[in-house]
Amino acid sequence: MVIFESHSERFRKYGRVVNNIDFTPVIEALEKIAIPDGCVEYKPSVKELEEASAKVDLTRLFGGELALETGYCAGQNQLLNAVEYHRSSEINICATDCILLLGSLQDVTDDFHYDTSKIEAFHIRKGTAVELYATTLHYAPCGIEGSKFMVGVVLPAGTNYDLEQDHIDCLADSDSEDKLLTAKNKWLIAHPDAPGEAGHFPGLIGTNIEVDIKKIQLEEI
Figure 1 (cartoon, rainbow, N blue to C red):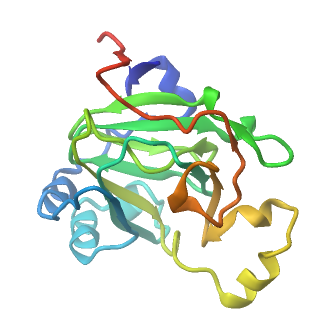
Figure 2: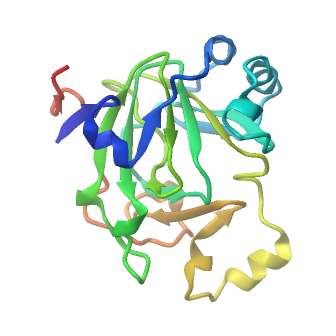
């Protein structure tokens, strides 16, 4: 498996590097947050990150005045485990180097299965912010050689919060895309070999990809 850089032409179908915003205040705020050991932690909105986002006028420059939320995903991870998508773009602001495992929503079958052999890996360097398009499958980043990662996450306000209970009840026996809906603006397809994703639709086919940078090739710059 080759790991491509974010400036690679192969990245263009998944997203873009965000060059029109100086994310320094957000990165500085991320660096003050403790990274957990041996697990992945996600928080959709954090006060200090919201304040830092306001300093760089993120709502206007990225959201077009749409209300946004800024949180983080951090910890240790080397596995794909699942893929998710939203009805919106997402910004990842990298306070550490990390690897993103990405795919295309267009490759999901009509019965909501996805072949993990289609996943591509991208090395996102510390200090880089990337926009992932709404059609990009993604999930928790991976660290470099098992190291910890810290990534800021910007999404439309309300994304990844709990669904309303009456909506949850009507999803239980669905055969439509609704069975993938696990939180507000979050559709998820899990790997059957990922214990942490038990209860979610197990539609990933193939290997639960494990990233070991010692065994794979970084794209030459």
